[in-house]
Image 1 (cartoon, rainbow, N blue to C red):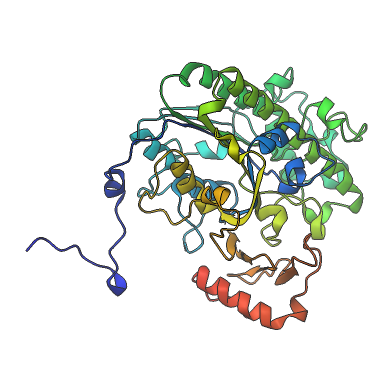
Image 2: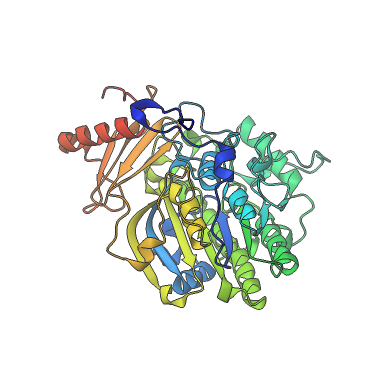
Amino acid sequence: MGMQMPHGPAGKAPPLTRRQRLSTPLPKPNGLNLIVIIADSTRCDHLGAYGNQRVKTPNLDRLAAEGTVFENSYADGLPTIPCRRVYHSGRSLLEEKRPWWRQLDEEDVTLAEVLQKAGLTTGFIADTYHYFKPDMNFHRGFDSWQWIRGQETDRWISGPRDGVDPSRHIPPHLQNPRYLQNMTQYMLNTSQRKGEEDYFCAQSCTAAMKWLEQDARQKPFLLWVDMFDPHEPWDAPPRFQQMYRRDYGYERYLFGYGVRLQDIRESDYPVLRDLYAAEVTFSDHCIGRLLDQIDRLGLRDNTVVVFSTDHGTHLGEFGCVQKTPGLLNSAVAHLPLIVRHPDRKHAGKRVKGFVSAVDYMPSFLSLMGIPNFPGLVGKNFWALADSPEKQNYERVFSGYENFAAVRDHKWHYFQNFRGNNPGKGPALYDLEADPGETRNVAGSHPDIVTERRALLAERFKAQLPAL
């Protein structure tokens, strides 16, 4: 008799090891290229393609008109690094008991590694500095990678400190020691900036344009471009800020991490929303330059271009500014997802079926002609583009630190699934009557709350705190 493989619980075969997965024979790729553009903290409802009529995003709107818009894509595990672990490994984090913010696991097999094995040239350009903290290892599988230094509190420039005074750039009631420390580092990092081309997202897109000039004609390729903008600090070039407000009260208003929610006043919200809108428009402008380069190089007819984000941000909802775990609503968990395929029959399509972030890696592989790679839990969202009536999921789940959410087309529910802090929950929203999630109706629907709690307990493999 041949050797029998050991089996795990309930007679199931144990999961394949990293070595076994990477040894899996791959079909020959279809010859298409893949460019993935991630713009951190992009709110879905701030893009024209998703219905916003105020914030100017002409380049992403053009990409959407030429591609397919997925209207209901949602995060798995949040925030920055957890989201990217999901994207690069194709694994859900929701049942993990270890902290979600950590490096790729040793057993993970990444999108870049699979495509590299399949013969694609793989490039990685990012100014999202968390990627490159010690031992994160997200460059695994990339033939080349480039880190644009200086975003947020990246320990890049340490002096000189003369003339760096963040207290001159924000109202006194928003200042505190942590904010001043963070902004001091950021001001040092931007102290040598002379023009728009020196802003970090502009540098990332310029680097991506150069990479395409050098590498795009060698063989099919993957280029992953990861921009930290429009993440805080909200500090867009003046001409973009002035599209939304002529006078912010300061020559350079700086808003970033460190500001305490309890210090923010109602009168601050309009200013902060304008600062964020300017950041979104500037990010769109930089992405537009990259899209133009794709066309100049003649890559449109053989390249899949994807735009998405990791999460959104709060802009005053229920008194919250910046992404807030305790308010796990669409402002944070709803992801823009736009895919432009060379086959123009997909132009202008809109897909209403649910997409989860765990679907990104298997879908990207399928788009390159490599379906059914072992060890992935997500589904191919691109199948929805050809079958508008198809649904991959009845509902989707998201988690952020101690909070869990479940959503279908009728109801959205969230609460804490560990710990005692209830945040802004438990909260239940009737999405048909209240698509903006402004009215918590949990008290009126105890039966729905009970049902949703059971769904969360099962999906997160957790015993939820009593209400």
